[in-house]
Each structure stands twice: as C-alpha cells, then as structure tokens.
Amino acid sequence: MKIQMDIFSIKQIDYFARAFSKLIKPPMIVLLVGDLGSGKTTLVKHLVKYLGSDDDVTSPTFTLMNEYNGKFPIYHFDMYRLSSMEEAVAVGFEEYFDKSKLDGVCFVEWPENVEGLIKDVDFVIRIDKIDDNARKLTVTEGKDASCN
Ligand SMILES: Nc1ncnc2c1ncn2[C@@H]1O[C@H](COP(=O)(O)OP(=O)(O)OP(=O)(O)O)[C@@H](O)[C@H]1O
Ligand SMILES: [Mg+2]
Image (tube, rainbow, N blue to C red):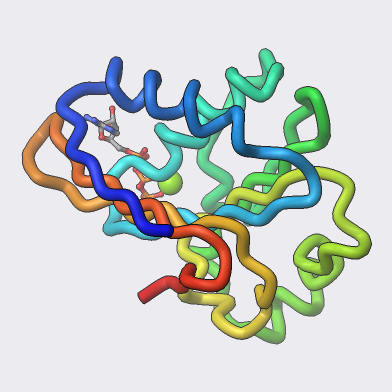
C-alpha cells in the first residue's frame, strides 16, 4: 500500500496524525524520512498526543531516544547524530527493533543511519517540503516499506 497526499498546514498534519494514530498498535515500527526541517518531529508530536500521552515531545537529537507514556510506551528515536551502526548496537537499540521484545511503538527519524538494523518495518512516512507550510506525505506500508 502506498498513499500520497499534500497537506497545507500544521492543522492538516494534526488531522493526518489523528487518522493515522488509529492504525498504530504495539508492537510497531514507523520510520520517518525527510530532510532537516521537513516536519518529522512535528508529526511525532501530534501522533503522541493522539496515542494518549500528555508528555512533552522534543527532538531527541542529542539523547538519540525519548520515551513517552501513552496508551503504551512510545519510543522516539532521532538517528541524525548517530556516528555509527555500532553505536546503535552499543546503546542497546537492537532490542527495541526486535518485534518479539517490543512492548510499544517506535518512531524513528533519520532511519537511513541504521539501515539494516531495523528489519520488520510497519510503515514509512516520507515528508517532502513543498513550501513553508505545505508538505507532501507518502505513506508506505509493510513489505513495500523502505527508506528509499
Ligand atoms: N505542514 C507542516 N507539517 C509539518 N511541519 C510544518 C508544517 N508547516 C510548517 N512546519 C514547520 O516546519 C518545521 C518542522 O520542524 P521539525 O523539527 O518537525 O522537522 P524535522 O523533520 O524533525 O527536522 P530534523 O531532521 O532536524 O529532526 C517546524 O517549525 C514546523 O512548525
Ligand atoms: Mg526532528
């Protein structure tokens, strides 16, 4: 499955998040692909709200991962500053990406930097900036999903 849509405001990203959140159940892994400032963290912020969490969603650029408490645990990764795949393994990320052990949902920004470590992906959401407020979203599901 592949769905594309253009959205024109933060309000519309919020609508998308509300609808998409209904598809999310543990254990699931969702990759967020797109340039710097395309809106990956913004989308996670809105998704986390609809997954029943009041937690403050911030970019885990330096911490690499934030955890939020919603209807289930939500793990928010940002692999942008990850220096190597070995580092991801060293800090124990492999555990989260093993569906048989995952007790919640993973949202992963910059998954390109851990290519190969995440095998069983449920959705890839690609965000392309059209202009200041408009974005093209491309959602791919299951076996069709990849970062490219
Ligand atoms: N329709 C939109 N959807 C998402 N973000 C939007 C939209 N319109 C404007 N923005 C703005 O674009 C910026 C996106 O920043 P955000 O931190 O979410 O990007 P990011 O993809 O996570 O970047 P990074 O790669 O640095 O982590 C925010 O300032 C947000 O308010
Ligand atoms: Mg971000």
